[in-house]
Image (cartoon, each protein chain N blue to C red):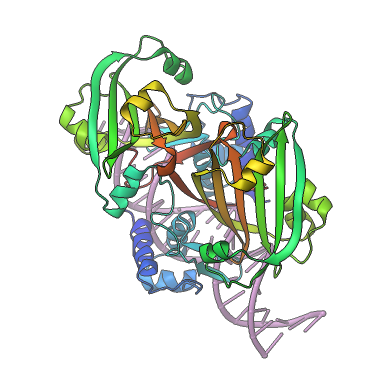
Length: 241
Length: 241
DNA sequence: CGGCATTTGTTCGTATGTATG
DNA sequence: CCATACATACGAACAAATGCC
C-alpha cells in the first residue's frame, strides 16, 4: 500500500472517530506533512482522496473543512441494491441460485453491448430474499472467454469474491444505467411482487483493468426495495436545475 | 484556467474527434509533456481528469488506453432527468411555474435536513412538460439566508443560472438519493400519470463551496421518463455482486 | 529464463501564484 | 499590507509493471 493511501485511511478513521469533528478544519497541509513526515504532495494526494469520497471540502486560503458524514447512511456512494445494503449493515438475507448454465448470448444483449451474436456466456440468475420475500433478481452474463468455469457454490456466495480472490482478475470500471420498467413475466414468477406493475432495473457492463468487457449484469429491484445514494462534487457546468 | 485543465480539454476534444481512437494508446506521459512543453506532473493531472471522466484507462507499464465513449449516450454521467437530457440533446420542453413563495420550511424537511423548524425558505415548484405531458415535478426549497429574492422570470428559466451567473454563488457538492415512491395526491394533480401508481423521486441537498447548506430539492419523475447513467471506477473493495 | 528499455506510480524538494482573514 | 493556506508547476529520483529480445 502506498504512503498516501495509508494516510488517507488514517485520516478517514480519525474523522469517523471524531478526532476531527464535522465543521472543523483539518490541520494545514504543511502541519500534516510534518505530522506524518512526508512531503506536502503526499498529503495532498491523501486529501484529494478524502475530497472525492465526500469527507472534506477544501477551500483555497482557508483550509480543509470536515463534512458531517454521519448524518447519512453509510457507505456514502454507489450503493445500489438491498443486497449491498445488507452486506454493509449486516442484515440477514438469502441467495437462491435459480440458474447457472452456459449459452450463447441473448440477441438483445448482444445488440446492446455491440458484440457478436454468437458470443458464449455463462448465465447466472440469482434471487435475493429478504424477510421471506424475493425482492431482487440478479441476472449476470459472463464471457466464457474470460471466465472458464463457475461452480454453483461460488455463485451462491459471491461472484466477485470468486473473480478477484480466486481467479486473480481485477475489475477496472463499469457503466451503470438505472431505469424503471414494467415487470416482466419472469419478474412475476420469481419475485414477490404483490400488485406492483413496475420494477427498477440497473444494467451494468463491467470491464477489467485491461478494458476487456467481461460481464453484463441486470439487477431487478422491487420498487419499495430500491435505493441509490450518491455524493456528487461540482465539476464544470453541470445543471442541477 | 490552469494549464492542466487546458490540456485536459484539448485531449478530450482529440478523443471526441477521433484524433485518438478508441482502443489505441495515448502518447506516453513523457511524449505528451514534450508536446505541450510542460512537466510530466502537469500531464499526469490532465490524464487523471480524463480517467475520472471515463475517457481513458491507465495501466502501469503499458500506457493510457482510450475508451469507446461514443457507444453511450452523452454526457456519460450524472444525467438524472429528462430536463437535463433535453438540455444536452436540444429536445423541446416547457417549464410551468406552479409556485414561488416564501414560507417556513415544512417540518418533515426540517427533520430530514436537521435544521431548525422555523427556517425561512423560498419554495419553488415547477412542472416540466414534454410532448404535451407533465412528466417531472421539481420542488425546490432555498434558504432565504443565502438567497434573498427569486424573480419569477429566473425561476422559469434556470435557478442555477441565476445563482451562479447573477448572484455569484458557487456550488460545492450535493448528496442525492433515488427512491421509488407511491404517487402523492399532488403528483396526481399536477403530473400526467395515466395509471401509474409510483414515481421515482430524487432528493438532493446542495451545499455551497463554503459548505453551507442552501438548497433542498425533490424531483419527481414519471416512471417511464426516468433514467440515470453512471460511470464508476473501481476503488478499493466495492462489491458489484 | 533473464536482461533491458519503456511506461506509469510514488515521493520528495522547491518555487511561485492566488485566495483568505 | 501581511501571514497563512491551498493551487499549480517544474525537476528529479526510484519503484513497479509490461513487453520485447
